[in-house]
Structures are given as structure tokens and as C-alpha cells.
Image (cartoon, rainbow, N blue to C red):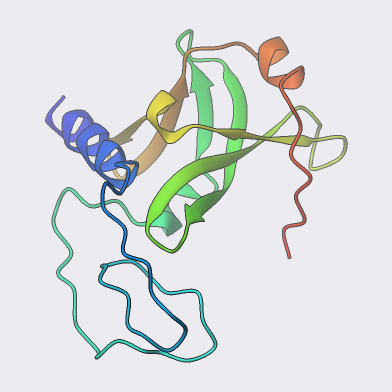
Length: 143
């Protein structure tokens, strides 16, 4: 239960919107803690600390997505990061068999619960397979 709470707090934290943004001109360092979309680095190098409640994207990509009835409804394929700062979407593959006929949908991170049990991550959504299959499709090329 404690790990589930920590994971939920961590996911909610990465989906928190940025409240203040500063306009910058090209070549001027941005006043933020997110990645910059640019051809060259403009910020002095800093190091970050990883907290125990933080979740690595490598642990989420490939995670099975279940509904509340514990039925498999998809698999996490990727994360959408807006302006290098905030996770704004989770790309999930739905349908298909062995990679054939699958399609992709982008889910809002706030609608997903994640859980780690004995080192194995799982994601949960309040939906069913048919709803996901009929959801707006996302054209996704993995590579």
C-alpha cells in the first residue's frame, strides 16, 4: 500500500503543470528546471538528486496496463514530455496480437495509477478494451 501511494504521488508530481513561464529570446537561458529544445546548451551544468519516490521512464515503458477488473487492456509504449518539462501524455498500445494490428492512444497521466509489487510495475486505468479500441488514435512510429 505504501509503495502504491508513493508511486501515485510520483506520477502526479510529473504531471503537475508549470504555472509560470518566462519568455526568452534565442540564446538566452530559460528560467526553468526542464530540458530546453535547442541545438546548443545554454544553461550551466547542474546535477539532480533522484528521490526514492521517483519513477524512471525505463520502468514504465513496456508496463502492462490493466483495467480495474485486472484485465489487460494495453501496454505503455512511451511518454510525451511537453517543452522538456512535464509529462503530458502516456502512449499506450491497444488491440492487436504480437504487435500486429495494434493501435495507439495517448492517455492523460492523471488518469493512470501505477503500482510496484515485488519489483514489477503495473499501470491501471478505469476503462475497458472496447473503449480504448474506439478512442482517438495516435499515429506513432516507435523509431
